[in-house]
Image 1 (cartoon, rainbow, N blue to C red):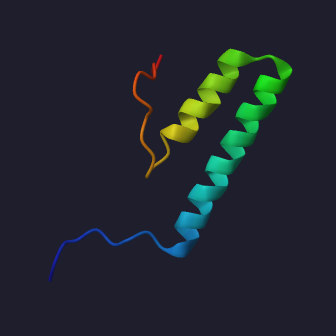
Image 2: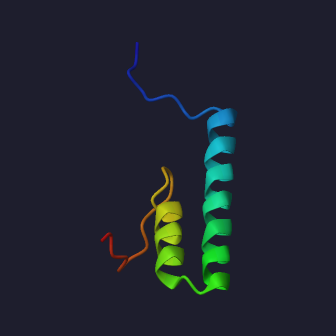
Length: 61
């Protein structure tokens, strides 16, 4: 028996996609309201979701 990690199922992939879309919406609304720091945090959170990668040069704090 192999100890390979199973591929995420459709529900997990759908949930991840929905969370990323919500974070992108939050980012857009923050930018619209002029809250640039909050928008950057939302964008970073979306980039750090499993299956994503943090953009080069992104600050984590």
